[in-house]
Image (cartoon, rainbow, N blue to C red; front, side, top):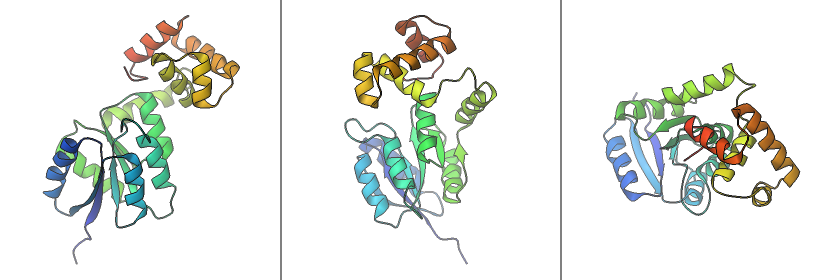
Length: 211
């Protein structure tokens, strides 16, 4: 008796990326691509409709829902498909958001085809599939928890890097300005800096937040 096909949904806003993934995965024994989504919202809809085992999810979709939000929505449904994040971003902020959202795996888009295929099978089996570099970053955080920025601190710092003021950040994250300032005080202490500019520069250099 042959194993059932692993049914895949490709979620990425770039048609060329989806076509490339389909070309690679369609040649892999035991895989069948059953759908594509150009937006995170569409990915959630298709996943909810059933008939999908693993969703390959990008993180950035331009305007609209973020890939991590879609991941959380998909994995919140009992018996729903597994989500394997496939992205170009390897920052702590992105990795933590995806893992906390319930992603079964996290791979970078430069992963070789055999690594991608293995990760899909691992995710379909309900196990964790992390790229070696991603696993290494998570292990580093676990080894030095006192020095690691929390998910919220990373969110605040990412928005600082995008040029937002404390007042704007408080509105985006639904926090008081005092709480935003408190997070930044902790960020400065952990990174050993004394300004917003220096904090952003240090975090980008360490790949904690996106450039």
